[in-house]
Amino acid sequence: MSPTFFATDDGDVILRAGLEPDSKHDFRVHKLILSLASPLFKDMFTLPQPPDQTLSEEHQLPVVDIPEPPEVVDAILRLIYPGVEPQRTFSLSTLTTLLSAADKYNIASINPALKDALKISCGLLPFKVYTLACRFGFSEEAREAAKVGNTQSVTSGCFDEEVRHISSTDVFRWVRFVQDREREGRSKIGESLAWWAMYSLADCDHGEIGKDFYYRLERAVEKAFVENPCVSSKDLFAILDKVPDPPLGCAPDSESAEYHIEGPALDAFNCPVRPMSIRRKLAKLADKLSALNCRMLDETFGKGNA
Image (spheres, rainbow, N blue to C red):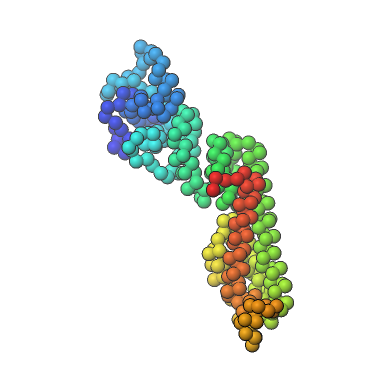
């Protein structure tokens, strides 16, 4: 056997993986391990074997032909055998075949590892992960994929095969969620930046200059949120490096600090275009967008485990 594939020296059955003759590979494994992992294999091994059953030429052991590619069978064996370091990450195409095989052979014990692999892939192709999670009944992973997905996650024609395996309800739920979240997010950004700047700048010397700055900042924040619905305060702070600098903040007046803390007047350093005022507002906005995302996820997909 190839050293790149999992192998045992004392196995009592051969799994012959692959469809094409030149790509088949024999895995010498144990009936007991397969039976413990899969009820289907357990039932297969308890049935009387026909007298003309195929035997391997090299080891004279019974042979079970399975259509899955050798690399997929290898990954499954590493996941079900005790004391063997399993593979942790997979390409999405391999992961799709793994999930199909786990479902076909009812190997439930490897589902936690496959769910973890799905979560790792969420940021790459969230809609693909979503379709796989829906297809195999992984509600938490479907929720995680939707959390980071956006309207650009679905490219026409790219996911036809995946969509065939899920219901129209699941597709509609995704589309409605990402569209509604984007609309509400834009509204929340407008409330936090445009409206706030409009009313705050009424008591500020910057007037139209400040409004123009906040208009450009609002557009940049919208773009960041649409591209990444899990945008953080750190991400929003980075936007300030791309948006042209605002004018210098208003000079503080001559009143004491105690007056501005205890009195009715605004903080002298609370000019809307002062750097700390902007950062403070962006930090609060990031929290609002995060809360919005979580609330809408709960409403659409149910409450998560976290």
